[in-house]
Image 1 (tube, rainbow, N blue to C red):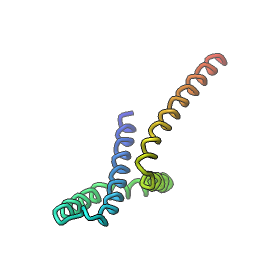
Image 2: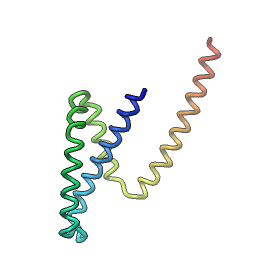
Image 3: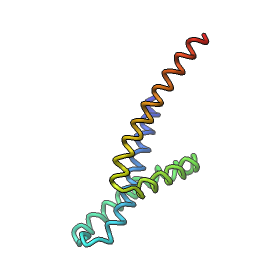
Amino acid sequence: MRDYQKFKDGLKLVVLYQITLEQMDTFKTTTLYRHSVKNRMKKLEKEIEAMVAGPIAQLDSINSDLFTELQEKVELILDMDSNEIAQLKVVLEEHREKKKLQDWQQEILDKEVE
């Protein structure tokens, strides 16, 4: 179980890093991208890319479908505006509550069958 949790946490970190890299690219076209910021962002970008290169390659070699699905989700998040991202949390919470209720109902049905 601990390995599964580590995998989930690591995967989440890789996805967040990928989103960060993609978003940093959009920042480069703004007037806020001054020399000092430019140097820091370039350094951070290189460090993040080095950190995620191995895990991404490994994930792609293990399950390319999962990798493709994650990349599609990253792109979906990047296309959202801040309002949509805020709404996403509400939708996810509702979905999780519904899933808990369904799991609980299934558990009751399973006990009745026994």
